[in-house]
Image 1 (cartoon, rainbow, N blue to C red):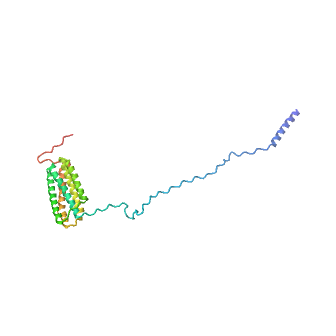
Image 2 (image 1 turned 180 degrees about the horizontal axis):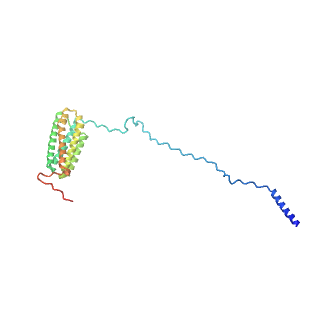
Length: 247
C-alpha cells in the first residue's frame, strides 16, 4: 500500500517537472489587429481637353473691313438712256395693242370689248406720237433688257389668252390689263422720268402718257369688280336672277 502511494507521488512529480521545464509557446498575434492595408496607388491622370477648333483664316485680301457687310451688294443698274426709254415705251404700246385687238374678237362681255377698243385706240395714238418725237429728235430707239423682256412677255400673254374662252378669257384679259398698266406706271415713275434727259421726251411721259396709263388702270380695276369671280356677268335689266338648285 505504501509502495503504491509512493509511486503515484513520483508520477505526479515527474509530470510537474516536465511541465515546468517546457518553455511557453510564442504568443500568436491578436485577432483584433487589422490586417495591413495595401499602399494607395495614384489615380491615373485625366486626358487633356482638346483645344477648340479655330476656323481657317480667310485668304489674304478677303478679310472684311470693320463696319462693312460680309455679303456683296447687287450691282446698281445703269440708268436708261433716252433711246432705251423710247424702246421700252414702244414695246409697252405694242403689248397693249396686240392684247386689246385679240380681246375685241374673243371677249364675251360687251364691257370688255368696249374697254379693249379704247385701249387699242389710245396706245395706237401714243405709238404715233412717239414716232413723231423720235423723228423730231433725230434719234433711234435702242433695245435694253427691259424692252426685250416686254417683247417676250407679250408673246407669253397672247398664247395664254388664246387658250381661253368666254368668261375665263374676259377675266384673264382684265387681269392682264391691270398688271400691264401697274408695271408701266412703275417704269414711268422709277425709270423714265428720273432718267430722261430730253425735255420733250420727259414732257410727253409726264403730261400725256402717264395720265392716260393711270386712267386705263382705274378703268380695268373697276371692270374687274363688275365682272366678279370667273368673269361672271350681272343679270341683264328686266331679268330675275335664278337661285341655284338645292344640293
